[in-house]
Amino acid sequence: MNQEAPKLSTDCQLQELINAGSELTARNRLRGFALRMLTALERRIYRARGALGQKHLALPQASPNFEISRIEEGGMVPAGKPGGIFKPGEKVMVLSREEIEETLDKDRRCKSLEFMDRMAAYCGRPMVVKKHVQCIFDERKWRMVRIKDTYILEGAICEGQGMYEKEGCDRCCYFFWKDQWLRRVG
Image (cartoon, rainbow, N blue to C red; front, top):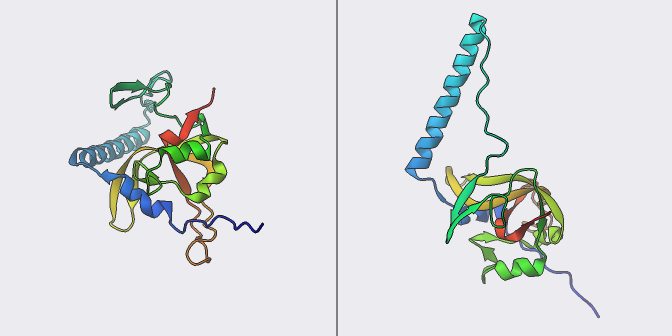
C-alpha cells in the first residue's frame, strides 16, 4: 500500500489574517493617539523630576485580581470562565484536529482565520498563551487591523517548510489561534 504524505497548504496564515479582522474605528485610532501622547508626557515628567532631583512616583498598577470581561452574544463572559479571555502565561490545551475541523467552514476558516495543515502538529498538546492579539499591521495596505478572539502560543511557530515552490519561507512567524481552538487546563 503506497500512502502519499498529506500535501501541505502553500498559504501563509499571516497573509490571510487581515481578512479575519476589521479596520480600526476612528475611536480606536483616537484612543491609540491619546495613549501615545500620555506615554510621551509621562516620560517627559519623569525626566524633568530626575533633573530636579525629585523622587519618582510609581504609576498605579492594576490589581492582580482584576478580571477582564468581554461581551458575547447572550451576555457578559467573565475571564477565567470557559469562553473568556485567556491571559498571557496561562496553560491551554489545543483541541484535537477533529474538534478543530468541526469549527471550520468550507474554506477551512473559523471566523475568517484559516487553520493551516502545519498547525496540526500542535493539536492535542498543552501550550502556554504568549499573547492575546488585538491588532496587527497589514504590511500590504500599510494600516492597522483589529483582530478578535485570536492568540499566539509560545513555541507554535511556522517554519515555512515547503511553501512557495519548495523554497520555503524564512520569516518564522507565530501561528495565530482562535479561542474556539483552545481549552483551559486545570
